[in-house]
Amino acid sequence: MMSEKHNLPDDILDQATQALRETPIPPGPPLEVLQSVLDAPSRDIDIARTLGLRFKVQVLKPLLRIAAVLVIAAGVIGLFSLMFPSGGNGGSGSAFAEVAERFLNIQTGTYKLTVTLPGQPTQTCTGYFKEPGYMRHEININSSSIVQLFDMENATMVQLIPGQNLAMQIELQNLPEEKRNLEYGNPLYECRKYIAEAKENPHVDVKQLADEVIDGRPVLVYRIKPEEGMYFMKVWADPATKLPLQIEISMGQMFGGAEPMEILVHDFEFNVPLEASLFSMEIPAGYQIVPLQMEASEPSEKDLIEALRLCADLTNGYFPETLDIKGLKTIFQHLQREKVINLEGNERPIPKHIQKFLEISVSIGRGIAFVHMLPDECDWHYGGKGVTTAQAATPIFWYRPIGAEQYRVIYADLEIEDCLPADLPQIPQEAKGSG
Amino acid sequence: MTDWESIVEEYRPLVWQTAYRVLGNEADAADCFQEAFISALAVAHREQVRNWAALLRRLATTRALDRLRQRRRQAAHFDAIPEEMPLEGDDPEPFQMAEAAELSDRLRTALAHLPEQQGQVFCLRFLENQSYREIAKQLGIKTSAVGVLLHRARGRLRELLNSVLTENEV
Image (cartoon, rainbow over all chains, first blue to last red; front, side):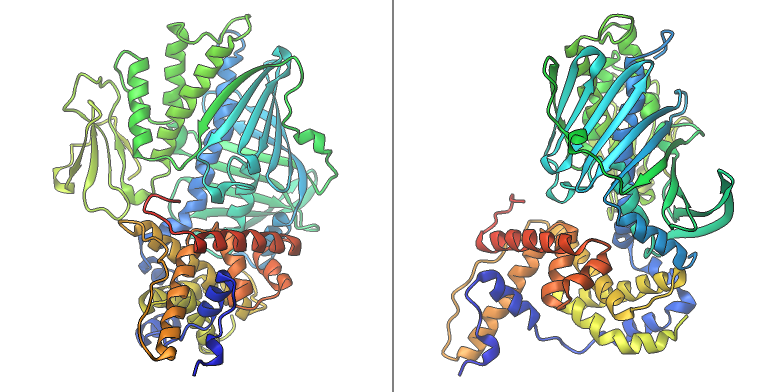
């Protein structure tokens, strides 16, 4: 006779859910696993380290995503300064948990976002956000005003340049389903998620620093830093409301050299009423529209190859000096000099030049993002400075994919070979790497 | 900190059952068991844990879903959600058990395709019997958002269970 527990409902999902709920559970866990957990307080973080690379990668994921997002958000702001140059130049206790929780529960807000890129003037924009996933940035660069609008549910971004009646309509292609709604391209959401995960990750160190004084009153200060990676975050919070007053994110290698890129999110106002019209994606009448399709899937090795190929094509066969935003800037300066793209001077930028500028930025940016999203274990090195595509046998980039025994070596002819660690190229003086 | 040994002793069945139910094999469940407790220990170092059961249940669910997704990514070839196979035999009990096991596996595979938060909400609600309010509190979201996420999760899971995925899908 059929037992009652096997009387499954009609709906396939309900049937499957019931079946899963009633899965026979064997006794467990194994004794050695249990003992390992019982011993955890004495070994603590060492045990976490034994959990393997995947766990570390899982922990690092939000940080890497922040990096990718900030490259887009900050990079766009920084790169726009090339378009509108002036003068011809292109475990701290429950308090932290409370701060994190309150920050995660905000529904609307306004803020200022100040981006400091090495070698670039500081840029500040005003930001507005509203759950779920709407964001507006107003940027002023050299008297030109730019409005960026994000609607992540529909995977679209619009950039308006009111002074020139110009609108760039950006459609994100292949945006992974799990990144819709809230996350992708929204640095504030990333900050919030990062803070939430920091609460419970053994690989992220949260420290309460000495109180500081802002505007004459003491504030709480926390530093959040992963064990690995080149980013850290500082959060200043109001001791009374437990809401953040400002957040600073510092990133190193993405821009090359010793100076980090710094993002400061400040002047917060939370849960304020915001008109829906602020987030309208409708392009005002009379605007010229420049359409752009932007690939939004996870960057891969293929993107790096494409970026290197594009850089070489644009600069008479030479690879970029560095694989960072600084290297990208050098390429655009070359394009300006060669008049391939003319965005300088007093004349209005030509829409097709803007379109080309954005397409190149995205393609090369994805290659750079792939490199900077590699965890330290991947031990990447770049040696393309001064090398041209004619030097086919010269290795210009090598790294070890996660979990692989062999390295992937990219040569100047952009062919790839797998290589044992013992057979790796000598690291050139200029090679920049993660290790 | 509270006596760690007592906590492990008290909640090990909960964590083991949560992990095993989602993962369906002992090796993965053991790893997940370890990760959940170690993450909980890290939390306890930073803040006072008021509800160990809720914390451990959420961590075990999250880590188990992470592992399901990892299994999916690591598969050299994507394993399609198994189609229902006709089973032969005269004894209805083994037949029904096999059918239930197969359905469970199909749901596990489908869960690996859900966005992170949808998966968490679905498991906490339907496998762990948590209320909307408890789930909202644990995940730091609004109660209304739990309803929305559940609705989306159920819709997507139903779609996945009803479809036979090919290697290249998703």
